[in-house]
Image (cartoon, rainbow, N blue to C red; front, side, top):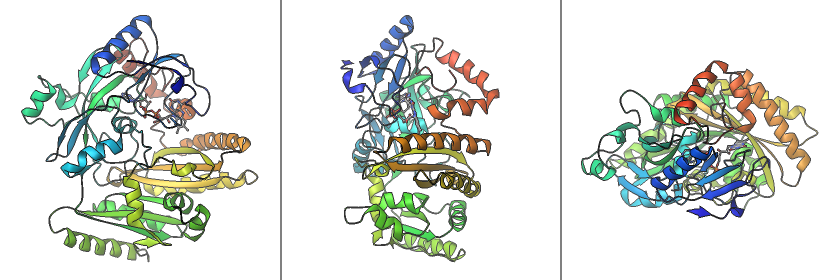
Length: 467
Ligand SMILES: Cc1cc2nc3c(=O)[nH]c(=O)nc-3n(C[C@H](O)[C@H](O)[C@H](O)COP(=O)(O)OP(=O)(O)OC[C@H]3O[C@@H](n4cnc5c(N)ncnc54)[C@H](O)[C@@H]3O)c2cc1C
């Protein structure tokens, strides 16, 4: 269970992390429980992570010396149910591994944008990384169902429908599929654990909802010189529950997704419209060709209201090929290609407020013209279009430490500006933590009280959030 320390040192780009005291790679819940109990008795902090390398870029870290709890070796897929489109998995299972297991059942994972190969499905969903498929996300918890968690007290607990008496196998034989995340009774433990950055408990398995593999899938680009018409199209598509994977990018961000061996980044970027909406139509088993035809006609009619037209390829790159890339974990970070590095900034807002934030960020980046940075914009509608994840990337040459420092400072200043303008930093990572909690001080006592209940000795991921 103990693992060598050397491979875990220095994962974090800022260099602000402490070396691990020890590394534990457990195989099961009993080992996790035993470790948490020992650490609690000794008041030793624990840093948990489930994803694995290469390059745990901006990885889960601690500035205090802690024991690393690496769950990446817990790779069991306990159950898959094709009828209810759900799987029960351990935290070390990655998107590629789960997709391989789901394929024979006619299912696939709901994915965020370009997860790295070692990214844990459970960690991604706990982090609330936005998924590409807007239509199927009904609630913020989706695609998470019930789960098993070991709290900082060392107690193991089952949430949602998994809290019923009996073992997992007994539940499964009785037809229970852990689809209900809320509970037991009226308490929604998962809603507290999700987004807590591992500070309240360690999730040891979870049910995850899966997407049914479409019989036919067709992807489109809609290009425009302004973002507003694309926002209108997105909103109408979501209102009418049309389209599966869907997002908007500016030309710089889209070019990074489209670039291939035959075309350089600059060649692609120079030829794209300023803004691109990517949308996929997916048809199920019954009359799939008919469904794609009438949905494509609806998409064209919605785009025509903005004097725009969906196309199946842009500048020689097929939208279907981009979708295929998005379905496959790539070993390289597409934003860091060709000697580039970047600093990101993201928050939640309403989609119609996005243009205001974009203008604000553009103005600040352009005002620092002496420090050349690539500004990229990625807008991901969430929750059937009820809000959106707005992400900016400030790209620069990896061999330019002065620009890297400038990008970090600019991103922090922009975060403060966007938070003041109403951007919701619902994933307040290290550079944004102080600002996020200062702006929502009324919440802090309640969060600290919650921490006290689930992790009374403050051993789980100390220093994150407001504790
Ligand atoms: C600009 C920026 C700066 C950042 N700086 C920092 C930083 O200084 N320190 C830092 O820690 N993060 C930081 N982050 C966040 C970090 O990038 C994300 O948390 C990322 O997902 C970590 O990836 P990972 O592969 O190391 O961890 P993952 O294993 O993917 O874990 C992601 C998060 O979930 C928690 N987690 C993982 N598995 C479980 C589980 N089974 N049960 C409960 N919780 C679990 C982890 O503790 C972590 O908080 C930063 C992010 C950004 C955008």
